[in-house]
Image 1 (cartoon, one colour):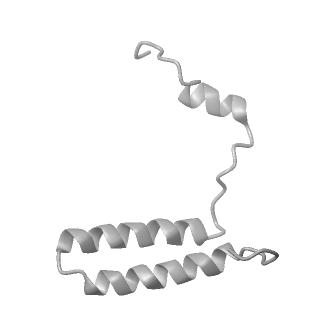
Image 2: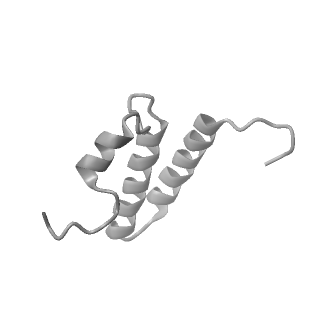
Length: 74
């Protein structure tokens, strides 16, 4: 990244997706093509503006998923 140039994350994701599509077309193994497709799906999800990744209610998050300590399967 160049100094003083602002990062355009959406533009980067679009370019990366196009590169991955090109690489997927060149792949000969179906398993490799599936992995390319999966990466493209995840980048498309990250690019979309329709999700909210922020934890607005941390207490609810901790109650639902725990605080990283084992609770003995309860």
